[in-house]
Length: 235
View: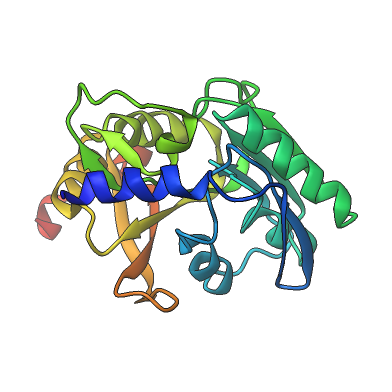
């Protein structure tokens, strides 16, 4: 069985549980609803919650919010505001429910295919995506919305994300991209360069109880994107 088939099988099995399920994480009382990407089986959200860089008083946009973490934790513990979005309407409803359950009021949650429904002119200090880094062929067909949280056909979603994100960054803002150790760094580097961006790993470490490591990339506009060109003496 291929790795893709294993992931698809795990996703199918996850939906055979009894719903809703209640979990408590980071002091938050959370519900997981049917049809939402399963946090028990894929726990990258936990690592990014524990390793998120400083975010106090920051305006944050989270792409792909799932059941609500790490976004709701950031909103609860110091972020100025959070706009969370997901292409899956069940995830949007689930995150809204969890925000209400925990009295988190500095949060808006909307349905959006990456930036498709983000209000034009809205600016953020941090745009975060726990990206679905498993590469599948460009013509791959999703069987349901849950699979969109695991796979990116041809890394086309990543290309869209990095090409469109700059329009929503505040001055001095940055993109934070969650990326597994088994992801395609070569394709990320190509897409970053094509969009006149620069990236650096700000966090790296093993995931909880599994043989997988995660990385958090900070991605910003390059110097040339601001019109800077080195003088001949610097070349």
